[in-house]
Image (cartoon, rainbow, N blue to C red; front, side, top):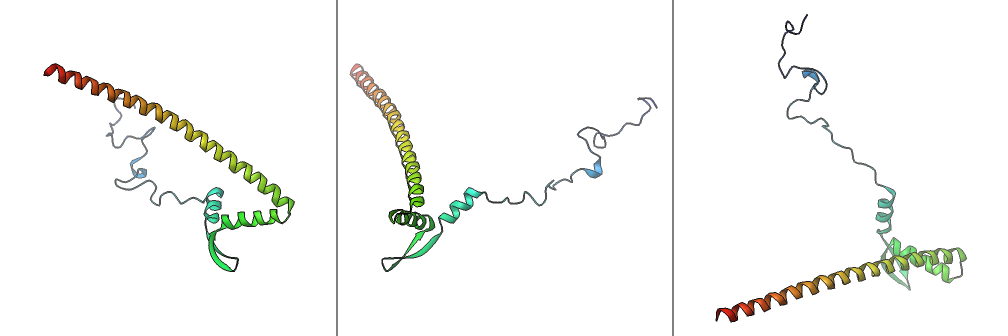
Length: 143
């Protein structure tokens, strides 16, 4: 059979690369993934933060108080370190150094931001002052 004698098929019925047979194509209005993406599992960091934010009731000096698990853990660590537990003391020192370093990094970032803000505000005020001078000069010329 030559090309010219081959029966011509419509565009909708053509089959080839990127054109699957009509019976296996998605029907109009139907999704290719009807159930959707399944919900994924929570990662470790998310579970840890969620757990540390949970509230617990503790007795402190004869009073019941509600604090987060993170606060309770830090209190317990500090109390153990104060009681002379060397392992707790080494953990506390490591955590303290890390916290101080991150606080110092935040302070540096805020200082840089405020310096940039100062420059921007200075330039805005300078342009505003210049536009006021131009308006006064224009007013003098028009009178």
